[in-house]
Length: 309
Image (cartoon, rainbow, N blue to C red; front, side, top):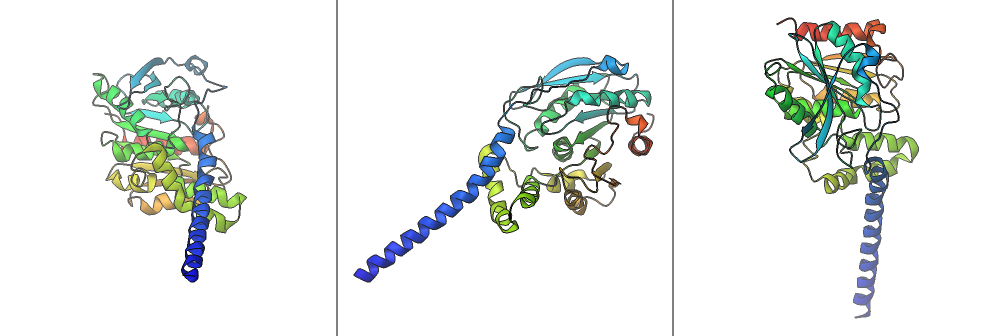
């Protein structure tokens, strides 16, 4: 009888210890993710269309889950395509794309740039790491399709960092999108979380935490996080064209993320790798035409797949 009592005590203590460890491993991603995403980003710097010698129409769209999204449209007469541009997790504002919009306009492409949920003038108080932002893109695409001037114009999605993630997820979820340009996207949130954690803590701890990241994210966002991520969505590309770009020494999103996305991509995708640590791919983001190599690669992709109609 005494032995059974001791055995129960040992088993209870062991289970308690295991639960304590599991609780600790769950707490780590929660403590990291919550301050990062439980916020609305109000940008310190925004750009104006007139600063780039162009005009833009400011408008709002409503998402399927009830958020109002702020966007700007730069029109072109008889456009070859319309390019939807979106930015990263905390900065910069999507208005930084007015420089690209001017460049695109000069070459016959219209542009819509929008701030994703929980950014700028868009609604929302939680950043969704790319898991729900494709709904914002979906609302923009519907706006384009409802516009008699643009409804038959090809649509290209162009995103940077988390915007690149959202761009890939969007083309996977929205068949009406005709092309993709992605800059410095991470392959999945659990992979980037693990890699960045491994830089700052023992590798064994990062590996122990990694399996619990999807659980924390699923609990937080209540979406199919196992499907809505770049390495899954890129498989849905079909024969639509895509240009994936990354810098080899990127300190924000390690190059291994680019390699994983490529691994899961259809064989026809195009790539551009920049040497050094340039998360934005070009250091002339507001004046892309000044970076001849970058501008030639982007424009070459667009002209190849979306020439004059």
